[in-house]
Each structure stands twice: as structure tokens, then as C-alpha cells.
Amino acid sequence: MYNGKTVVYTSGTFDMFHSNHLKMIKYARGLGETLIVGVSTDELVCSYKKPPIIPFEERLAIIEALKYPDIVIPQRTLDHTELVKKLNIDVFVVGDDWTGKYDYLKELGVTVFYFPYGSGVSTSSIKKQIVDKYHALKEQIDHQPNPDVR
Image 1 (cartoon, rainbow, N blue to C red):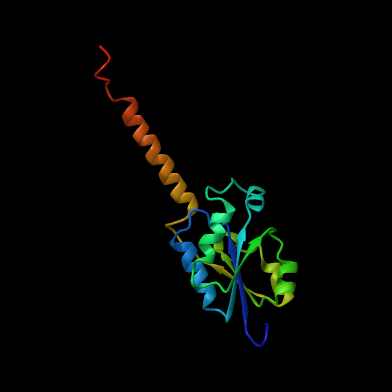
Image 2: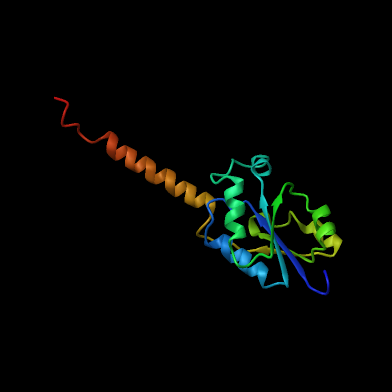
């Protein structure tokens, strides 16, 4: 809490920004008066999964352009202990694909919400659709007769 206002923090890679990203940020906005959004750096993301498609600076700019965050910061680590202390964070919101991973923040007095993404849109599903469509198109092209060859 800062100046009597609840400080909420949410973060993510926000690669190939989509509606579930927006829903989580909007949900976090509703939990307090000050919303800080962390955007994972490329180096951080590469430490636990494949590199993002969209470069860090562009992902940061997309989140900064939204009306919901008050502050947008780089996220350089998955350990949020120091961040919670430095920024007086009261509420932490993260996608439910991380369920249980941030329960340690409760010991610091932080309320942790695991936002339910549910089925449907995800960066992984978008990437898979692109790859699948590419392979289907390539298969069509590879089996297309070439009228110049006799």
C-alpha cells in the first residue's frame, strides 16, 4: 500500500499481444488504485522458454499504450521478493499457467491471484496456428503441377 492506495502488480511476456493478455491486465486494474505492469525482458524469457517473436522494446511499447497501467517496467527476474518490497505491492496477478509458483509472496503479505486464462487464445496457440497454416499451404504448393515442366 502506498499513500493509502492498493498497489497491484501483474506481469508477463505479452508476446503477440492478444485478448487474454488484455483481460488479465484489465482484471488487475480492477483490484486496486495503482497498477504496475512488468514486461519480461527477452533475456528473462529465454531463460525458461523459447524467445519471444516480438522484441522486448515493442512489447513494452504496446503495454505502455494501454489505458490500464499506471506504470510499465521491465521484468528481469521471476523472483518477485525484492520488487514486492521496493514497490509496496499488495496484490500480485499472474496467469493460471503459473498456479502455485508465486504462493511464496503470501508470506510477504501479498494477495496472489492466478488469473484463469481458460481455453482459447494464447501465444502458443497463435504460433501453432501460424505454423499449421504454413505447412498446409506449403503442402499445397509442393503438389501443384508446374505448367512450365514437360
